[in-house]
Image 1 (cartoon, helix red, strand yellow):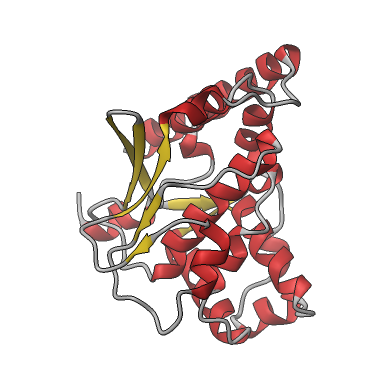
Image 2 (cartoon, rainbow, N blue to C red):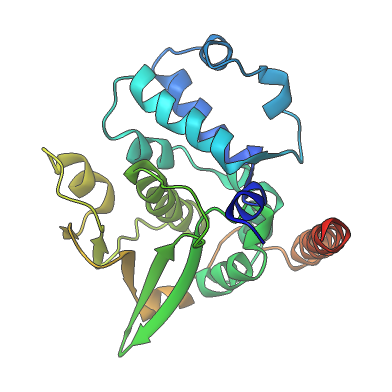
Length: 241
């Protein structure tokens, strides 16, 4: 399979853009004219259950950073993550009993949100390290992608549990920016740059943190829906091979 064909299969749910638009709106920026300036019809990326190619997502995100003149756009975009930002997956996580169960479901059904960034987990003593990577055939991504992913993951952890949880450490593979103030404010932990990976580490004990909104009935409903979505995605993949 060629790289171009593989790249075309990397896509992102338009629900991820919700947090991007919420942040832009908080700055007083109307997203519709912005999208129009990129030659994108707003209606095409705001329809539910729609997926956009990775190239389109990266264009919107990186141009939004320039448009708002925010060098920390990814960090700030992540602060506006909410359950709906992660499609049906966010609502599924909201109804799990514990944070550990929620992120276990996230790993199982992550394709619903997109396959732009792949995550893996390493356990060491009493810590969990979540490592972010990209498919080998993915186009080069700016730091906004990784910063938004970690920032939004932290936002979801805090929102789901109602507890101001913070990582033990965050690592980024790129050079240290001019200022690290926003990293320290958002993550509330040591942040290292020029590392071998993009990752964040949390205490193992976090997995037992309860989720107050948990509802077993709704969890079963949303998980069935998620399973159906994954089944349909697999069917489409098989059809296009």
